[in-house]
Image (cartoon, rainbow, N blue to C red; front, side):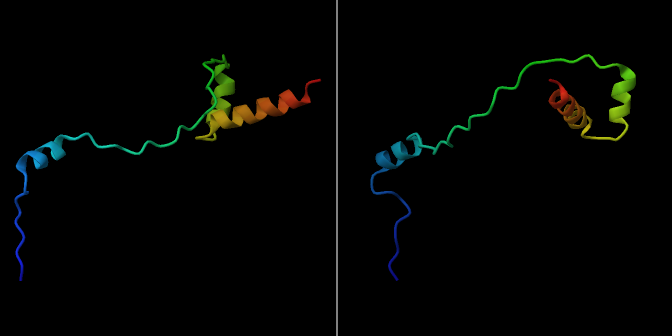
Length: 73
């Protein structure tokens, strides 16, 4: 059985290899649409109505606004 040395042949090369920067594969950039910074004033009773059905209330409001928008001339 041949035994291999655990020590590197050239300690300087081994030390430099430890500190050599590694090249990481970069993930491709994903282009996402910019999220507008907007606020909307909604009366508290209207907000309470949509929040009463639980999570997803913002999506429900958006769906209703979109339907109303399509009805406009």
